[in-house]
Length: 340
Image (tube, rainbow, N blue to C red; front, side, top):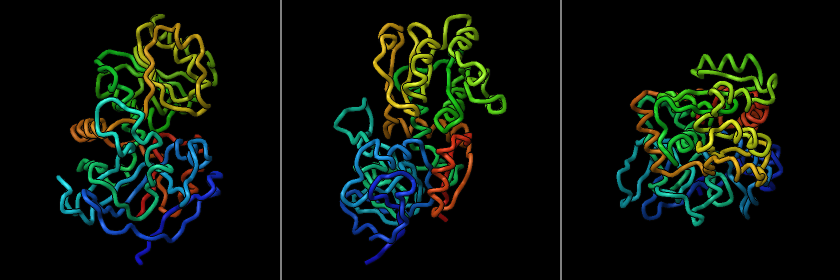
């Protein structure tokens, strides 16, 4: 029996429940399947929630964590279309969501859950529809940064309605989704306002392209500062990362008739407060995005030769350290893992 290395959590008791194990390599290919030698992965806050058990149980065979990964195709079933041995691919977050609106029938927990094995394993066998070609200018570690955070940012900006030049966007913090949204919003010609936790981080965000920044530690009523920057109107679009602790201010920072993309749950699920209904803001819950969203994003990434902002790179066996770096909140951009 062929074996490989994989990280597994069997009890979902946080980062310390992870173990690097020798497990059986995936067996023979089924119809439409491909075998991928994994080369890189990246971590998201969602992975911390998954390992804590907040997003469901581990399943009978434990949980292989992390939704994001990229690698090289090493074997292809005879009926797998448009993909060849040697292709460089990244994996979709939602394996069953090809296009169109999200439906509850799809695997809502995404890759790296009890429904779909994650990317922290040396080899994966998936259906060819789950693999998206990597833009030529990206390396594996860069490509592994996009599947969750990049697609979420893209879908938040333009999935529900077009983002037009001159529109204003409010972003929160310096994590992967917000920095991807900053890069994409600049491509669309939008004005970007960002909030962060210190003058130093605000300065960094301005150096990366933010038009205005607000230090929310010094100015906890940052929603009022956003209103002031927009002549009292509010921004056209807010991408809310914080969840329960930020959604109220996000709503009041957004103009009547504007849109709030509800992405993150850093402080838990938001309550159904009266302001959710009285604000006049369209609220769009974001479940990352579809394969179609991924491919549209990749067209823009390829055309503009865009590179992700990488905060730190770790080796395959340093997954716990990478997750603790993410948990610290000190990163600016994506934390990635290089398997080679």
